[in-house]
Length: 183
Image (cartoon, rainbow, N blue to C red; front, side, top):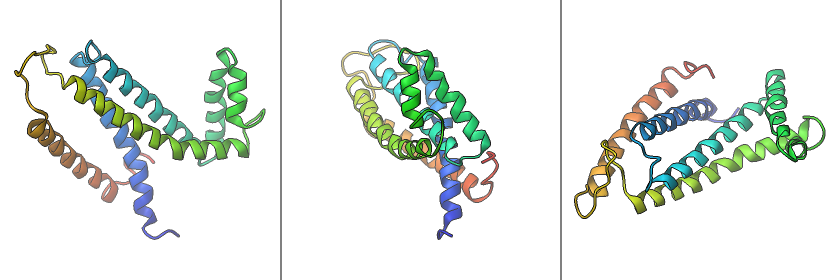
């Protein structure tokens, strides 16, 4: 019985899906244009870290409804770390004991709350690295000297236009088709 709880629920669920869609489009664009090649390899690595943090956030959020399937998913996925050296200790730390119970739920809730702030910090690092190296171009060649487009107004306006289109699509899913993505 939260005021406007329907909006919060659908914005959270569809926002997570849209965030993954945008990140995957960004990732495939980077693969296509070779953004992982020097001198932008650190930008690429920070983006991969952001993707891994997003996957961790999604997994901990998936486990939170705490039905039988999420219980099984938590067991299977957290057991995967046991293949690492000291992996059994890591799994037991994640579980909060020897099996998945209430301490696991508390830890996953804390991680699901904390990881978006870490993602935001890595996004700032990602942008700082981008400003250091500059944006790439469709040819993948690096220009020297002053033969590049300035960040403002060209890239800022392009990003604002893309963000406004995203808000239209996002608004459609929240207000007109909130369960279309099967949440």
